[in-house]
Length: 283
Image: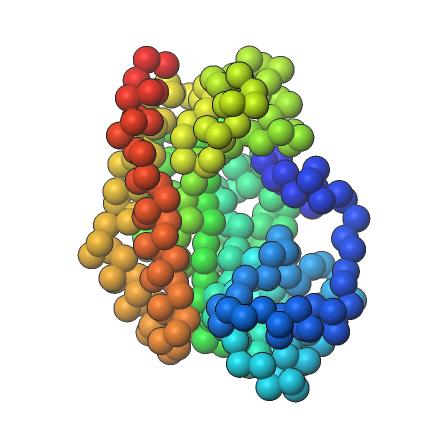
């Protein structure tokens, strides 16, 4: 299920190459840090075999008595697997990253987010609540700047994020990475703003508009996103999200993970913001 904007398949290949349970847990155990991220775009996968493997990894962590906290990325179908969530929580999982991207069905369809479409937007809240049931926080990833976005849809997406039971909020700008269908399409349509490669690759960092939007100017999109970020990462709002995460997960460690993630995203989106707004004013 390759998303229109995702470069993982281009970079890693389309075939999933699973390491053995022992190999994974051996490395997990040897890492000196207490907090660990499983670098896998979809920790649970889509098959019964992959689901069983995840449970075996979690059980092995538990059986060895390894006391570490960790988080991972997963598809939203993880909410269908109570046993996975149970053993993930018992083995130290404190947060799960979900690629939600949008609360609009047409945008999910246009970006090839087939699983999210299948689950249905009306059922997203059930996914968050199921994860919370096991004391795990939800990190929801969203995109600003999709082709059908307008200033109004960006405001609505921001309000959805704030009013939902998402604990940590990643809201970045649509970025056409090399090797993706999105990049090829924007290049063919002459919509890329910065094309002096390799130097301009440094600008493709998810916090700068590097393409010409369809329904507004580059400046309007940039201005709308900056306004959204100010609202999302407001200090009082982040504290409110922390309290809500604490109530939902009943897990102070998970709630703290989500709060610290929000602080990191705050720092990421506002770094060099003033310079980048000026750079976009003439487009």
